[in-house]
Image 1 (spheres, one colour):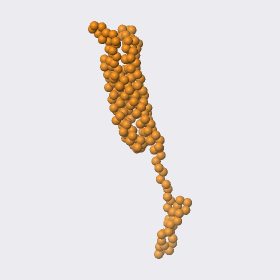
Image 2 (cartoon, helix red, strand yellow):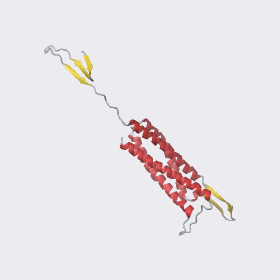
Image 3 (spheres, one colour):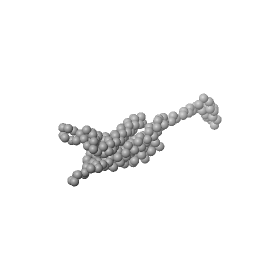
Image 4 (cartoon, helix red, strand yellow):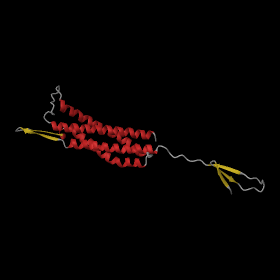
Length: 206
């Protein structure tokens, strides 16, 4: 059997038949199979997702540790009272610490899944799972930060209608620390929103 190649086509010579004594030439055209596109773009998104998770973890841990270690005692006291302020005096601040601690734990556990997304950028199941959990954590961290921010506002400004006094003039260090913790928690919540958007875009273009 003889074969020749020319212009991307292959000519195959068939053996002569005894009855027809004719030569039949069959041309086979070969085409290259295109490779899937978009893998590099999705890998870049997955790497950015991993970096954002580390940033959110730092912010959530900062919010948790700052609020959880906030405690101030004034240097003066009376025979019956000692003026002290601690985060666990208010259930809102306790919820804040618990919520951000849960967010920190989730972010640590999500890092291996994010690494798998870098190695296998075409995997849609992992992105969908992280999208659902990130959405839950957006609501969780935003609720904790917003409720704590309301208490911090009252601590700074008070409320004359209800005779709530501003305590930050006396407990200045306490108010500065809880304010910083609230800011860090809002930063974590914003990063969670970006993570949700990234996952949604990656799934939309899958």
